[in-house]
Length: 127
Image 1 (cartoon, rainbow, N blue to C red):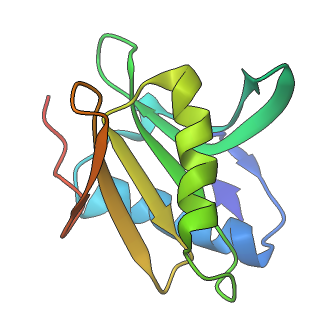
Image 2: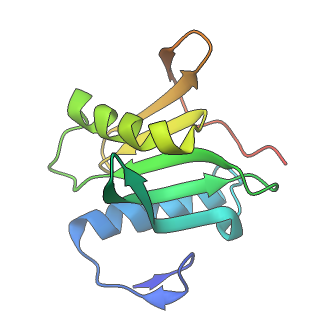
């Protein structure tokens, strides 16, 4: 399958299918520009290299959303949320999107109050 973000062909594993569908939904349904997405970008968390499935940036180049994709048979649990939160200790984004293609959890991060709040849907892109 041709990845519209990386602009190369990728093997369509179950997790990759979820990632590609999420990219298309973010672009077509919510207005997020693919030019501001990074797929499988590396970050260092506690001295270990980790890969974020998708990071969405704003027009100033600041990270705005982490997307964590799982295979359809992997439930979106607290463990998945914890993984995205660990990545967020580095990126400091206001939105987390956790999905397995069947289940989707959108979380808003309130850094000041040190709380997470679940949203009913992904916010539309705001320029």
